[in-house]
Image 1 (cartoon, helix red, strand yellow):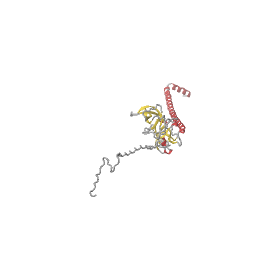
Image 2: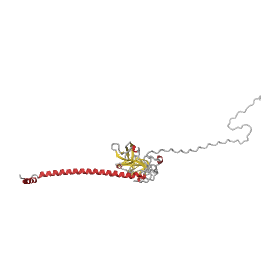
Image 3: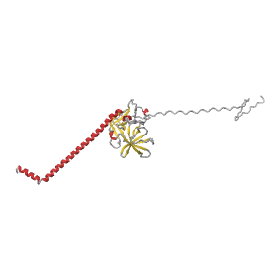
Image 4: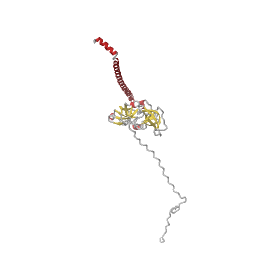
Length: 322
């Protein structure tokens, strides 16, 4: 068949008899293209989400580093910067692994802080790394007080409606901190320096035992803000104020802890007990005066005086031959 007629016949067949088959083929090709586009779009979306998450993490770390750079200049204590990574696994609740250890100058029990406040405490110390107990760790506890120094107590982790918080148990029953009051470290015991912000009072509750009041404290440092921390060391030589509240712009009206003078320049050592002052001796009772001997008013007569009640010797007898 001549070529001019082939094109006409083929067009006629595709338009009539073969039209359903051609339509099915075109639809299958379109569906395949649409599925390919959806897969490509999904892949691009996942890549963009991963990029945004990475950018958010970098932005958060950048913000933390900037805060620490401006904050470290206000500290009156020596410190060691460190990176923290959460430890996964059973029994590792509230544990982080720090990138520094004993060779970097860390000491067991040192306080760990951020630009927002207290983050935790060094728990297990190794040569190149250390384990940090965050405030969410079950064994974490810190001596705290209100900003005005009217209420003292101990704060420990607790869960309130599924949210990790701290429970503040006042020592004195008659004191009641206001909601929103700032809670700072009291410096008692020598583990944590005085004045480190811990959190704010979020409300009043009751102890599970039912015999003691507790106050819920919302910590200032969230668990997601401990990727970059500072581990405190000793006070800077010559620093006149070992109170760290000024580093956060907090003004305390409470007196310094009683053991700060005995602790000297070591915030991590317990204060030595002072010997008790000797009590003044009680005055000795005066010795009784001797009673005077009664004097007989009768004139003295020759012979030996005789007193009533005294035995009398028999009179001496003379022999006849004398």
